[in-house]
Length: 386
Image (tube, rainbow, N blue to C red):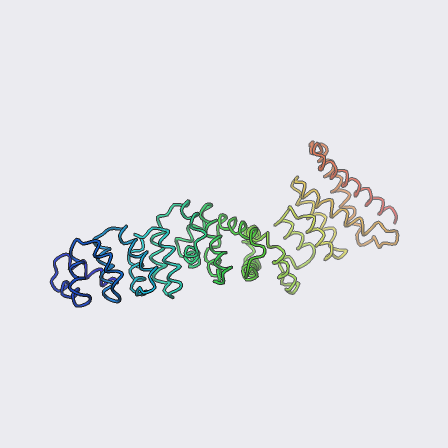
């Protein structure tokens, strides 16, 4: 196609050899149309010719008739089953920037059916480069846009870092994946920004039951395991799919799991990642804990309290878990004695802080202060049994 563009340009500039070549590759009529001013004739001939002649006809329109005419010619060509697909794809690759975002996406969808994605993606990317974020957001539901995003070139990487455009990219990539075209390479290439993590979080929240979810969840989990420094951002993206991650966690040997070294490590990692779920994480850690873990677990749980009701509930939960283990008269309290003493100190101090700060004006916070004082008293009474 590049050769056809060059040939038409030379012929229009008066090169005799180029004009003769136009006749040889097409016809005398086509050569005249390439050189003359009959725009309607050029539009008609595109529907009539194939092969090198079609390449010349498209090059003539590109050279003589402006972007609107080229847009119409390409639009017609991708809708015409008789078109010479490789020639049309080459024209899109050459002149894609002139087609506009919508037609560019349609062309990519057409190219996927023709197995000609590579050249058309290049042209479509040029067409989309100048699109506003609002336009990008409107393209999210087009399958051709999803294919562009799936290739995750530098342009798409820039969109993925934008708070607005990243949502469209994530939506398109997830739709592409659900339709059977893997987006795992794209996820890997685009990962890194907070905007992209938030966009993924929005999609994981909306696609709990999507097709092929497991492979996306597994990608996130593999990266979570391999990159401790990225864990907070990855968890932010995949929090809605925590259930899928924990299935993968349980399938791993305990020593290899993130936070799998002990109940203390589990509470520290998962409690820090998701303070809103601190109560549930405390229950998980309690099921894993040995008597010797409880002293450190008390400190970890109380250190995670940030004043939110969720973390206060987590502190109350670990207090209740410990007192349940030491209150029975026949319980072996000795291994828990240090932890119980620490609980009395930390629970009493936190309850006092809630009261002196005025936090107890909130009725739920007031109940939490009452609970902490109750658990501290129960722990004290349990220790007194010995």
